[in-house]
Length: 612
Image (cartoon, rainbow, N blue to C red; front, side, top):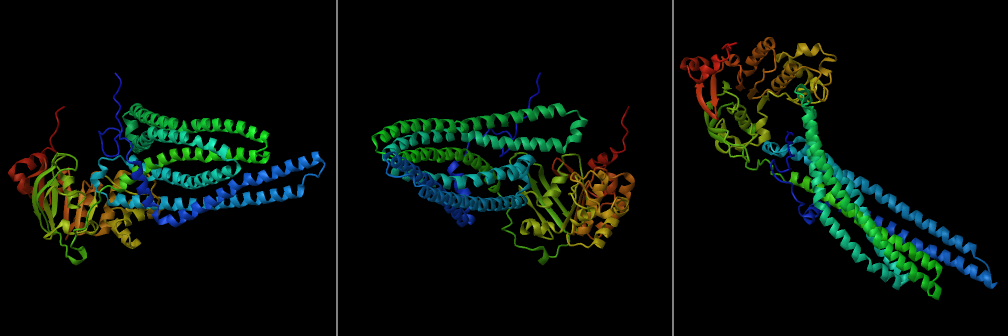
């Protein structure tokens, strides 16, 4: 039996079908608003592109004069009335060379300016997306893969930049060339111009229909590209676990499935868009053949000179070229629209709202008195209530332990305290003030947090500790490191505090990483401290040392400790026992043990021996 392959999650959450293309015109309108700050530069670029095209368009007409001059010279030789005027031909060709040189100069200048504008545009767009990430509620990322978010910042922005670079100048060049060539063709021969113009509606019909068919596939292509990136990022990030459990085969099967979907959408998109050029070329060649026949008849009748026919044939090729370019641009525009839609979707995600904030931490004396009042919480987009009815009062400076089985809601409670999520009902107060009265960024400056999952970035050990207080001196960093029992092991490392952490921070142990995050929290010197299994990755001997340091750190601060090893929180002022989102017991260690209830059973279970 073959394994069922997990399908990729679409951008708006798991379980939804593949979306069809959204409003193409609406996306282009949003894109025009995005490039509005550069409108004068874009206008200048369009003017340069138009000038370059116009100079190039005039070329065949001037070349026709040189050809006609040769014909006239040959006629004079045959009639015995003169010779070919080589000086005049040289003068015409010199003027033509200067004309083409000026056209090339305008083309280079507009390309140079365009590349600078699109680079600046993508630079601003990535900055906007990065700032947006920091303003989006954490709940949004629960339905998004990291790879898909990264794909929007990298692949989609790159696609947008490349398409803009090519399409805007090509549109200006193609339209100018089309109009200029049409005028020059009318000057040469209205009849033959009419023959060529008749083919244009057929070309437009082809472009419109192909765009309509291929746009949904271009959107799928961008979507599955994000899914492939997400899978690769996920598998690479967990490659140790992947290898430990022999998951390579399944990972490759999932990748093959995603890659096949990406390839399939890409094949359809490229095939349909690729049909435009051959079909346009076919229609153009039909017109070309008819013009050659009519032109030959007109030359035989003497109504057209050879030079004019030569110029007209050149104009036919030039006339078809912008039409083909416009067809090619339609493919680029589809890629650009598909990428832009994904970027705009992300930029339009609702942000955390702090507009109702009325208090500033600097104007309010925060002592650390906290009250949870009938707190109720369920994750957005789900019907499941995680915290059902949580109420508790914590006095300033108390050491509060939150215990309970996995899934009881312990970590969720401290996340609500930090306002990582909004409450479904109830309220949390700090020194009598509702948390919603404070700006999130301002409020979090009073909290220090050490999580079970350590996070360090690629930089020196000194910089990673200093992340808790960016303006801290080296002496303050080292003092915090000593308090967290970090100083000794850091000095045994190559380059000590200046040792660089690699990208995956694998050049130190998991326990050492945990110590560094504790040092970071100590350096921040917060009013309220949150420790979520902070010593879970530390050996017993180091844990004892850290506990001593933590006892000193917690003096005078309100501290919340989430711990599974209950022996580490025996001296807590208050222990809150949680189960299924509710407080089932609360009190000191001795009081709860005397009750012989939930906490006592949980505590004693740590020392029970399992039967062989």
